[in-house]
Image (cartoon, rainbow over all chains, first blue to last red; front, side, top):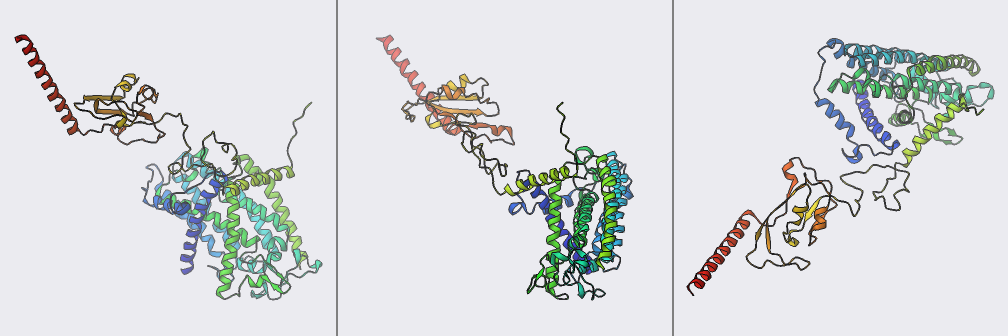
Length: 367
Length: 199
């Protein structure tokens, strides 16, 4: 229960910061100033927006399927929020440390689709319906390359446990029960004979342990943009065509929940990308001989120092990816439906399949 | 003959994607600078391609040109209430009612003698067409156009500007003074006329 409240609180904080960052980053990239009035530099703008939404009338359209309409925002947010349960925030802190975390995450995020369809169908509105159908088609399609990219990580790491995958990507690896005698080699190739187990840092991140995972990371990142309905894959919400997509009929608190779910999804996919590919809560600084940068910047597991360092590194990496998401939104134009499907089925999926194959071979080189 | 060069292929796509990111990044970095609010005639006006272009309007504003025509202002101390402006106004937005002065009421700043009180000097800015004719005919240059252009009102009655320096009571007093003086003059005239008849 405590983990639930802590995660919810932290998530709300991050989402508020992200909503503000989105407006400021968008403004700066377009030579504007963004919010300036509410609070210093407009920093209370997102808070003001939330307060405004909470005061608004809760409108349920007369012709809507009321049960579905009311349930959908809760289901969408619950599906996304449940995904945070298995994310390791520090070496010691996982809200729910289950052994099949990766599998659970993929399964629970797919539930999001049901909520979207409920919202679109329940609204009894053609734009909402079109938006929901586009959204579902897109998410279901992009789960395949994303899933294959994650599969290649799972094959390299030989684990479905996020915490075990995290430990493998740093100098603290041998402290995880079950990994005491594991070794990390440069680029994962034992034949090179360079042992990086105690060097840690960036050299043991998954994208360096098995460089083919860099390709998997790019595939996952593109697919995750599509899964969180972010530009350039935002046809489900295409403002200029569909008003707002599946949430066009929502107002007040229900809209706030959908908005929260959307931004939580962005945070979640970035967290997963960091955990699986970019070394999770591990420091990027390697030990260089007597200069033990990796140990100095990771703390001792079980103590407060490791919690602080772990949170710091995890959040910094996540915010860099989130910034990249924002920048992509204000750089690239929206893809057409056919281009979207072309990219997914004819480009990303075949490449992801090849990556899975190569990752399997790489794993053989690693032992 | 001249075939359009087709830009295709993985390398070209990656290059264009990266250059797009570079463009937005450059603007993001330059957002530390801001354009300065200068008039178009300023030398610097066209030399600021970078930085945020937003003008925080109520706090900052681009200066207006010197010969711009905006809100009217009447310096009532300099006004001789000649009514020329009300006569030339094409939209009849100036209303003037004058009262003759009974005593000496001073000079304007350019040395013209004032002989009339302005009991009413109203300009309806909602009707004004900003032609500037009234300022050209004004003999004492007391009616001018100011650089103020932001004077919207919620109630349209507030768009009528009152420039008179007399309160209604003072105006009434001046009127009675004038009536009294005229009465006295008429009486004196009648007396003089009667005296001539007798004589």
